Amino acid sequence: MIPMHLSRRFARRQRAFTLVELLVVIGIIAVLISILLPVLNKVRGRARGVVCQSQLRQIGIAFQMYAQDSRGMGTIGTFVQSPPPDGYTSYRKYWFASHTTMSSGLPATTFSFEEGYLSPYFKVPALMDCPGLPPEQPNISTIVTVSPEMPRVTYTYNNTVASGAKRASQIRKPAETMALLDGATIGRGTGALKLTMSSQPPQTRFASLHGRHSGRGAVLWYDGHVTLEAPLVPTLSISVYLSPIARHRLHNVGYLTPYSTAAMPEADIFNASR
Image (tube, rainbow, N blue to C red; front, top):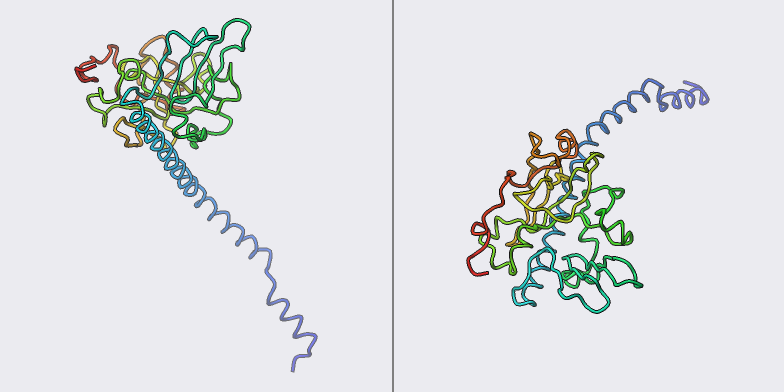
């Protein structure tokens, strides 16, 4: 019979891990983490893309409510009140905020989310901020300069439609006409990623679709549906205003539709009744 004190010591030895065994376990855990992390990052990225599409869809619903209340007038973009109200030298309303310039002696140019013409319909400023962008990405430079407290706006509107139509019903092919998209451009000189307020497809010097969701950007179309589209990254320098192509590839910024030096004929965009 084995003495009691020896049997206890033997049992303790049996239960203990050796250094080699411990290192093997740590190595297996490290390998599993290295395999799982890219998968988890992809899942997280896809989840952000789903949230972004949901936000754009809600903004699209807000626009439909606005269009009903305004008897079909307006598009997603901007309009200028002329003449401006008393005390203003200019008064412009965007879908997300008002942009005012006061007369002398009053506060300077400001942006106000509460006075955007779609703001009362979606009310939550966070809907304008795509979760696919890092928090440190600055707001649109025009807004930062005069209203640094303004919520970040990461979606770009279609100025081709906003400047050419008084009603969304005038758009000939709403299911093929972009209303808002995940927008950004590449800064001239700096090569940095910059948020942008508007785009004018297909005649634009700046590519503006940002593939921030696993290489694709979310697009809201005028019929209300939302898709993820891959940016058409420039393959040659289209004009002196275009930033280096390598920077577009680095940040995955490109065109939604093929670039054209000529504006699209209005007959291809709008119905005859204007």
